[in-house]
Amino acid sequence: MNNNEIEEVLKHHGIRPTAVRILVYKTIEEFNAPFTLDDLENKLVTMDRSSIFRTLRLFADSNHHVIHEVNDGSGFCKYCCCHCVDNEHIHHHLHFRCQKCGKTFCIEDIEIPHFKLPEGFLMTDIECVAKGICPKCYK
Image (cartoon, rainbow, N blue to C red):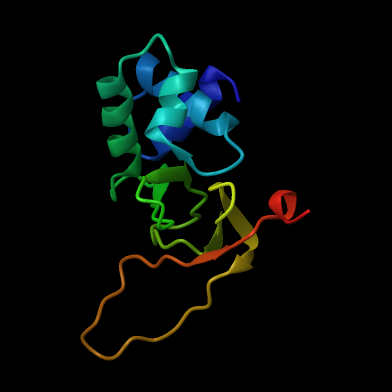
């Protein structure tokens, strides 16, 4: 994705494109799996941790939906790109955490089923994490 395309994505999500935000977004796009702040910091060695963290918080903000947080039970906050097509920011896919290597995967072809909550409850988010052994570790 080039810088002009990234600028359009950020504007679409209500975020003013800056050089830092464009660089962080471009780097996020390179990850094929959920990533941590440390993972991002290791790729952006010339950028300070606080700038990266502030940008992640902005991207994860419920008003923007650029990325979403993944709570996989590891104790570390992980993030992945959000591919929401509407304003409803609910993770519609399964996440899988390998208990051997610790890697977390987005399993986007398995949707989390929709269900109706009792009257008076309003769902704003749902997470589904399966745990086990990934194919690479299983061999």
